[in-house]
Length: 268
Image 1 (cartoon, helix red, strand yellow):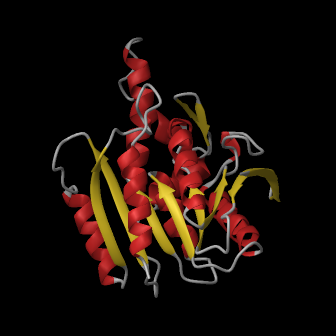
Image 2 (image 1 turned 180 degrees about the vertical axis):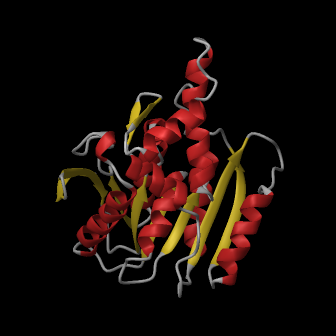
């Protein structure tokens, strides 16, 4: 594992590079989820990255602008800047290997991956872990954290409307300890998990559940059909495991790690 800082707009981005032992069979960029979900998921992302490197993949993890150990505050982040960071990571990884490219996202990181893929100079495969299919819905759920925090003080009424007024006025909002700029909120809310035009490739769509014999939610199934219609081959599966990106304690989902490698092994 090689930690380093990658120079970019408005400062450096912290990266971890997991090099394969031999010639790379694939090149993977990991894109983390939104806000606190990133911290909850660090252990799983690290475990999967190490396992993929052992299996022959070159894996680059990048902390996006204002996140983790990268430069800037979260308040400086924008949806466009995060997509630019993917291009920054792509250019660096392409100097290491020309192996087939995969963008691997978790939750909102899947939205970043799909949007950034529109600007890449080549087609890419995807690994989607518990993908967020609607940025608007994800943002609404995040705003509810503010409402929950105001319940005890009796100030919950009208919280959502107040947040929207602030953003419309060009003011940042504070939710669950994170200051979110209007540009970030608007970019997230406007994004949808849509296939890049003219694309085609492989997708490992993996979700977790603690229920036995769980199946994909209807919203996931409908979105998968749209990716299939765009020419992607989608390997979808629900594996047993916790929602580790939001659990109180740090938890592992070992079956997700196994399923991810098994899906990649099936790709041409």
